[in-house]
Length: 112
Image (cartoon, rainbow, N blue to C red; front, side, top):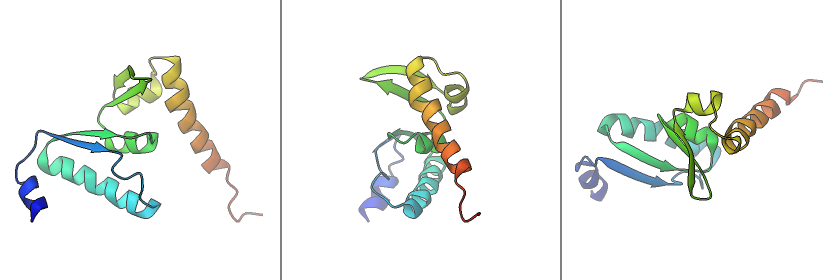
């Protein structure tokens, strides 16, 4: 009942600080889809704090990459990935995501 009353307020901003970081992979995927649905339903700005680049890219229209409290880049996921504004953004976001991708592509699975 408290949740229904809170959601009925139609907030302008919803703050989420690492809301799905403690979930297992399956529930994390379910919650990412649910968070996107909530955002569309309420047309609210969602400030989603995370250290997981994949979550940020999936959930965000705009991303702020920060280093030691300093904003390095505030941009769309596409621009952050394709046009990193600093060496830090290149290393922290782009190169890290590329390593994850290459690890997945290079995984042989059951092939022998």
